[in-house]
Length: 175
Image (cartoon, rainbow, N blue to C red; front, side, top):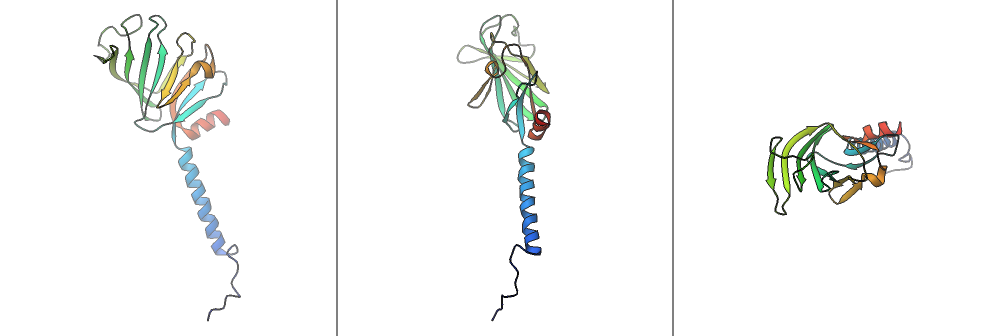
């Protein structure tokens, strides 16, 4: 027969210390995983609020804008390779013209089924910097999400787009 009168409650003593230690370890592990997730962040000048979306190696997103002279749609596609490591894989545009490729020197030009041109180039970037203009109406497209930089930051704002860890974003924007 077992006598249980002399047992202490589970919140007292060594077992409660181990339980607390395990809970703290789990919380720190989850926080560490969350803080080290890669993000693509939009970092505007003049202390305007930055925004981001979560990404991973191999993820693809694009910048879509209207060309300022030709007034045609241009899309530049980027692949995430890691922190401060982007590759512009290709650009899709409607016409050859001012400020657009006119030959295949920077890469290979292919025709799409809808009559556009697709310039394949694989050009590396650490960050992408642009200035928002309502005439161009630049948007970042990631899967089904569209980030309209004009609505977010307004005419003339310089924006740097980069891949970083979430904790780096927190340090730059909150501390």
